[in-house]
Length: 111
Image 1 (cartoon, one colour):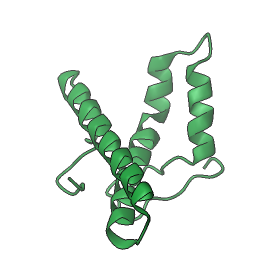
Image 2 (cartoon, rainbow, N blue to C red; image 1 turned 135 degrees about the vertical axis):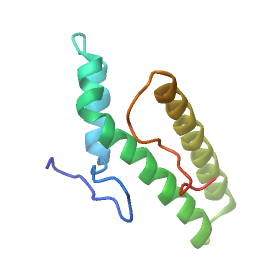
Image 3 (cartoon, rainbow, N blue to C red; image 1 turned 90 degrees about the horizontal axis):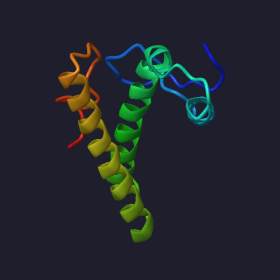
Image 4 (tube, rainbow, N blue to C red; image 1 turned 180 degrees about the horizontal axis):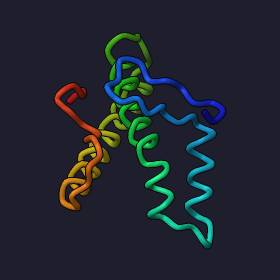
């Protein structure tokens, strides 16, 4: 297991999510001049998808259970909407390409 990974709680997936450091490393790798993107996503796609699921869940929970300033609430609501839109886009792309990955959004996701 790579450094900084966080095991997701109450997840049907056994793929660990990525830490911020792992996400940043992945983005740097993707901008490299000689990256095999198909191989990169084949090796890292599951962890990335789990990280998006975890971010949706944690952001939604933060909005439900914590008192916060209106500025922070608006920012988190915007982030949650972006994450859900991204997940829906990825699910549609995976379905249309015949992908065999679990959908990012499921009946258990926050809508």
